Structures are given as C-alpha cells and as structure tokens.
Length: 529
Image 1: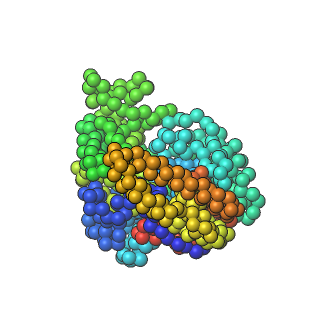
Image 2: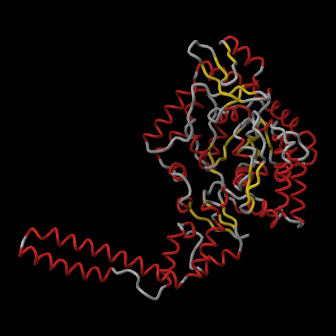
Image 3: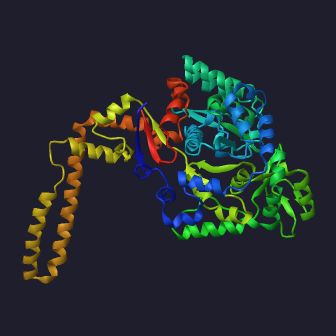
C-alpha cells in the first residue's frame, strides 16, 4: 500500500478538545501529565513508581489464556518479560464488539503494537508490551451486538444479561452464519471463517470468545489481552473501592476538573457520580447509591447494606464491585505497569477529566496517545479522485461544496456576477444621490430596491451554477459515488465498516500494512491505498 497523511484538523471530523490536545494548547496542559512524544516517555519511565503486582498479573493472564498460550511464542515471551522490572505496558481498551465491530477497533490495537515497537527502538534497554484491555464489565450490549460489512448490519439478537463479558454465546450462531456468508469462498475468506468459528462457536462466553478471536488476529505481534473481571485483580483494588464508595472521594475531584474544562470552552465527556461503582453478579450490573438513612442501595434489586455490611462485602467479594467509566482507568493503572493509554477522540477527552483524581490517590497518570485514524481504499478510487481534480485532503469537504468547487473549476463560463454587481452598485450610488437631492427621505427606498436586486442576482448565480452542474452530471455522479465509498453514511469509514472485506482482500498483509504506515506519535490521519 501507499500512504498519504493529513492533519486531523483538515478532516473536520474530530472534536475541538482533541485538536487542542494534539496542537499542545497551553490551556489543556494542567489536565494531563507528560506529553505524547519520546521525551515525554523518557520522563514517564523515570517517574514510574515501582509496580508490585507483576507475579499476580502474569499468573492471572496465563490462567486466562489457557490452551491459547502454547500457540504463540510471541505472547508467551511477552508474559515472561512482564515479570521483569524494566518492562512496561502500553494499553488500549475497548468493548467486546462482535467480530471486532468497526475498523477503529483494529486501528486501536495496531497503534498499541506499533507504539510498543517504536519505544523499544528508542529505549532498547527497556521492554514494552502492547495490551488490549477487554471491557468485559461493560453492560451496554446494544452498542456491541452488531457490526456492518459492506453496509449490511449483522446483529446478535439476545437479551442482555449482566456484564457483556459474561454473556453466554450459545445463541450467536445465526450472527456467525450471516457474517461468514458475506465473506465468500476465497482463501482469505476461509481463513477468517476458521478464526470466527474457533472463537465464537468454541468458547462459552463473550469475553473468552473475544480473546480467542483477537488473539488469532494479533498473536504474532505479541499482543497481550487482559480480562480484569477477576477477584484476584479486584483484591488489590479494594482500598480504592472503599474510598470511592464510602468517602465519595472521586466525585469532587472529577467535578472540579470538569467545571474547569468547561470554563475554558472544552466540553466534558463523562459525568462523575458520588459513587462510581456498580454491584455486579451473573444476573445484573446495577449502580450503588447512598440512601437518605445512610445505607447503600443496589438500584432495582432490593439490596441494601449498612456501612459495616458493605465493608464486609467488599472484603469478602471484591469481584462484585465493578468500576464505572471514570474509575475503570484507575483500575487499569493499578493492575498494569502502564506508561500510556491509547484511545479514540472521545476517550482522550474524558481522560483529561481524571488527572486530579489520579493525583489524590497517588496513582501514576499515563501518557494519553490518540489512536491512529485511517481511511483504506485502492488505486481505482485514488485514480478517480485525481481525475476529478480532487485531493485526499479536499475529499473531506461536504459533498455540496465538492460539487460546487468542481463545477467552478471545470466550467468555461464565469458563474459569478461580481463584476456586474460592482457596475450596478456604482449606478445605484448615482441613483441614491439623485434621489437624495430631490427628497432626502427617498434614501431608504433606494437601498431597499438595491437589496432586492442584490438578492435577485445571487439567486441568478445559483441558477447559473445549477445549470452548469447539469453539463457535468456524469462527473458529479462519480464524485458522489467516491464520497459514499470513502464516507459510508456520511461518516468516517473507520466508524462504521468492519475489517472483514479488507481482510478478504489483503489477508494478514492488512495488519502488516497498518503496522508499516501507522506512526503513533506523529498524529496525522492516514490514507492508505
């Protein structure tokens, strides 16, 4: 593949806050730690507190991988080096979208893989392991139960139960059949079919199935996949669970930060609550709230705890306490020797709300690295773009703007009436002067006639442009098709389309090309073709 890169600002597809972060806006600097560059990583390594849970981490990971582990020497090697004090992780996280969901799921993981490799080159005496944190405790099943392949929606229709990672996959067969039917019968299709079957039809819950599928795609790169929905991990997080629930310690820190961001004109992405944990069982995941009488209620379940009973419950069953969106990042940093978090634009924004909370708990705040964003196409589309006198940068403009610009560039006629209007404007100046001499009160009437004529001329310009568009109808139709191909449904390709058809076309070379062309610390939008 060939690659070209453009600034994120030029895509008109990312938030004001993310652009400000990428451009080192000084107003944001108090909301994050070290900068996302090699110098910043050097400082992060120097500042990193000692990590004391390496043995626990590796034992739990080996247990989770089970029979998958012997298949991959790269993953096994990375688990072994995690026991070393000079080994760090770079982490990305995402929900358990079936079949990986939209393309950016793949882009997140490849950004982590490439960043780990780049850091190893920069700091050869250290080790860096890419990690995919599975959001197994999330319960927004409607967000992950579908994917789109070439515009066709494939959904797993089943009732939501508890956390998505615990969901039984016995009813996913129909979705698997639909997915595989689209792929065809090529060698790459059969290879992907085997990976799908070996994950979703073999493993009994969505967490294990997702691990198996993602592992089958990225095991050669040494990607380590973690499921933090484990009692052993929650055990070391108990002190923070208690402080957040009983002391409501996180709420005020995050709220102050969110208010400060909004005062500077940046939108807060998430809202902290007084208590930022759910109560989790195999049957439900519900918020914990404090009642007026001082007890703690699990909403909608008729469960109540006194403070003493709640402390006993946390001590006995820490796995039942599930962090929400603002505490999950801290949980991640407690159980991993982590340097950086790689996230999408919205994730980076809500991480900016969290630093003060990390500081008050004495937890290292990671470097925030926006994931690589990309558009993948082919030479046919690239050729059409150039033949239409466009560029990969200009193709991000709205379709109406592209059409109007194209016609104005291609027409042999002058479609604006600026010169004529200047002549008429001079004439009206004379008319207004004459009218004023006759009766000064006629000035406004002259201005009104002038305004009506100016509006009529603008309408005539629109008619001239519309008429000329008919003369370029075929080219404009091609432009529409190119735009829809690159921006399905009017949005970025990476936010809707699954990776399947690209894998069918390129096979494992797809990941090699992403690895080759992604530059995690350059912060450019990648266009590959």
